Length: 147
Image 1 (cartoon, rainbow, N blue to C red):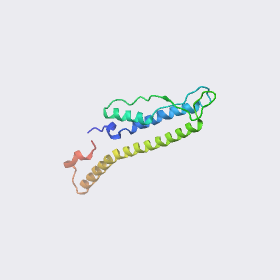
Image 2: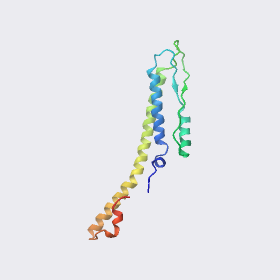
Image 3: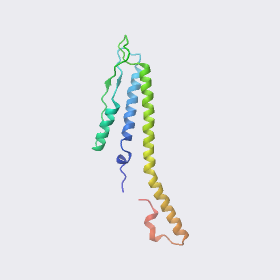
Image 4: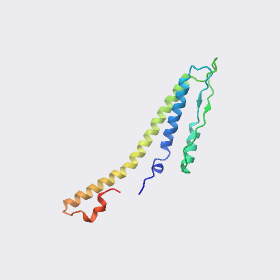
């Protein structure tokens, strides 16, 4: 029986990709905090995630993230719309969200791994109990290896 990781893991790998992409965009904003005329950019994470979820149910490739310009809270004289405090807060929030998504993905992997470990323990237990009873295991030979 083949395992479909796409179905088993759900949208979580795509969420990590979106979070990593958003980190790159915000890092680019932070790198250009002193560049005259630079416009801060970002994308709507919720809209991108909804697009990924829709494509996930249709079994197609992941979403395209459309970058938009961010409106500053305070205007600067040189036309730069990057605000250091805002970008740092967004970067920190995105990093925490990335860690949360990674935790969910790890939980999914543990959930997929547990039945495999349980079946291996059963196979070993069955083999040892057959050997203890003096049975050569010929009756259960197919159970001694994982398929």
